[in-house]
Image 1 (tube, rainbow, N blue to C red):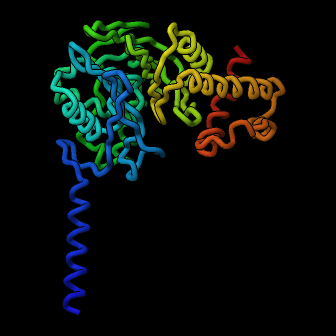
Image 2: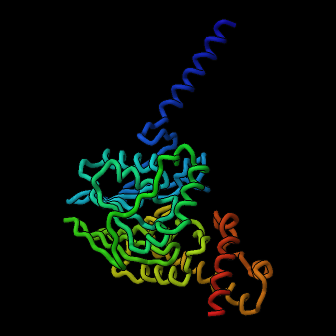
Image 3: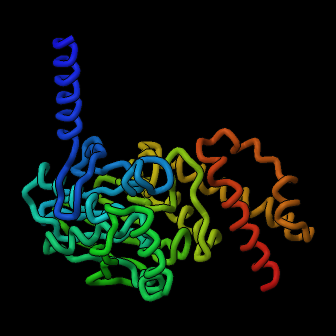
Amino acid sequence: MKYLLLSLLLSVISVSTAVAETVVETPYGTSEISIKVHQVKGAPVYYVIGMPGVPGAANEGMTSNAGFVVTEKGVVVYDALGTPVHGYRLLQEIKKITDKPVTHVIAGHYHADHVYGLQAFKEHTKATIWAEKSAFEYIDSPDSGMRLSQRQDALFPWVNDSTYLVKPDKTFIGKKTFDMGDATIELMLAGPAHAPDDIIMLVQPYGVVFSGDLIFGGRLPFLGGGRVDTKQWLAGLKQLESMKPAPTFVIPGHGTPSDNPVKDITFTREYIEFLRTKLGQQVDQLNTFGEAYTKIDWSKYKDVPTFEAANRRNAFQVYLEMESELFK
């Protein structure tokens, strides 16, 4: 019996030690999830992949992707993750790869799951934070304060009373290019689409695209939110499709990056076109949304992993858009 108790005690100590080894301490609190950095083959471009699901305790609010480019003149970061804790962890991962300073942080768009990590870069680097000027449509709106309060409740302690929304240091309108010596960073406004300030970032000469939430890799995009403009979203996707030479690798805002960008871009474009066409027909016939949704054949998309979670909400958003367009 004595040896059994000793064995159980050692087992508990072993488990506790294993758990403790997974805890990462940051100035903003602790984190227990794994963050793995991936590299694009043949390019000094790196990225981390967010966890699935709605931001919550299980994923600590880290649901979006982010990445960075190591250049001759410094490191350019695209998106900063959804909490200061994970923004800081991303910064620590950058330091493991290079001793070059972070010089630019690009806010791909101002949605909560992408921007609260900016606080870590603001407080622990000398980088300039860039956004498209349309970002202030959100930053200066009541929505920004309400969203922060919601995240402080839903994501405590990773988002808490010390968390704040970091504004960009500099903005641009439409397009911006950075000469980084051995690489060129091209920023292009694709919004208003998923958000008013959607930015596509192209890394040349490698042909790598950070698409932000214009593309959700391997899943249906999330179209919910009153600021979505699917007509402009389609224009942004067509802009990606028309790039010459074509992109070689795409890192989406959520989901799996791909070395077949054309396939992922086409899938997203065709899905949004399907929604607009089918729901536009239902609006023309003056059917209610409930009637419209049941009349449409969804078999083409029902096996996509996020269909159950996203499709009905997406359809409702587009129904409202098509209704609005009908009366313009």
